[in-house]
Image 1 (cartoon, rainbow, N blue to C red):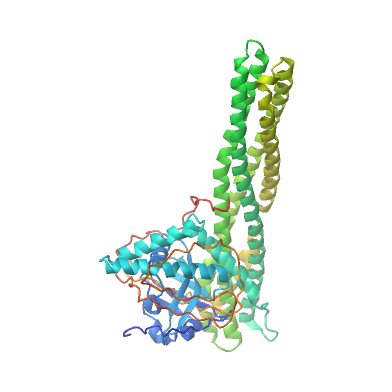
Image 2: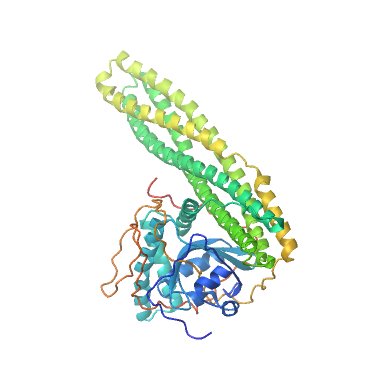
Length: 550
């Protein structure tokens, strides 16, 4: 394969039913591809197989995006992003790409972007990152260092938009894409003429899709509740701090008249102690609930990824049922089933852990409520004692602020108890068999039709040197807008750079003109250590910073 085609400024449309599939080894060399990949990339199969995946890299993609990708994949974590690719004939096409580590290899499924507003925001970030990388290269920086600069720039812009990490953006974008994709797609049904084992595969995949939709709906509800619980805890923590300051003043003021009213002073001190105790319980809840919220975000991401993999199984089955491919066209279905099983297993474990955390949170909130009742009784006693000892002029001004903070705290605590109960109910275990059953049937039937899983190359002895880009499709007119993200900040580009235009939400023929000079390729990334045990489960993500919307 010789030099790459330059972009011709035109875009190829990717249809809603066009799902790209490919597998690569750990160096990013293509080991498997489906007919959609071949057709839309304009590369014959014999040229794709054995080629580096970056053969379809578009110069309008920043190196920083691929640096983030490799960081995630080599840590054993799935990755998702909007990617602009370049076909062999010079046409560009956009996709929403997902890449999943599978053993010592990678499995990728890509689809047409459907969440228009998120896609446009991501494209704008790329347009603002490319000139930074190009300027760095002109100043003598290496390709690898320029890619690190681009990675940090992208992370910084996402942080300005309210995301604590790229994972948080990714965990938001994929479920939004899954929702928009369902809205844009026609209902899938088993063809009336379908029969035999391939029809059984499609029927099981449709059953699995329906179950995944139910689980995703539960997780959507749980995320809303968990976010509400987190925001409520944060708000209550602030109110309790205000209450603590006021009661501290009351305690100090009461101490000044302790000789005249010793009971008043002791009551104020007890009230202050209980208030501090409630505060000490509520403050740690914010961190716990932040972990719950981030876990639920990741669970939604994994279910949306499983949904996309299930859709890919359906597309493979339809190609065979429609006579477009022989039964051997189901060759990659067992690999998809392996990924689906891994995701469902992790989902089951994480849901159980999340439910346990929420039950503990509910008990702690109940404990706070009991302590708060004691606080209210002491406050009532203190208020009665103030006029009894003729101290209304001295302590009376503190009564109003204490009452106001107390009432606010009481209402907020009651809201937390309600939300905690709802969260615990939503986090109950689900029926594993409803998901594992269809996956097992699909894997068994596909395996009997195509034989053992397709062999994938063993892991290389050296770290990867070529970035894995994702073959993905262009903008579609009429895609469903999803207002899932806050508007991303506009960061002025250098005067010498005119960023490419992106499609507008008003629809019409999607066109994009790319005027940037080709970004430096990442063919010479420095060695990156990878996990020797990449078949283990990906590490948990629990350290994300909270969104600005909290």
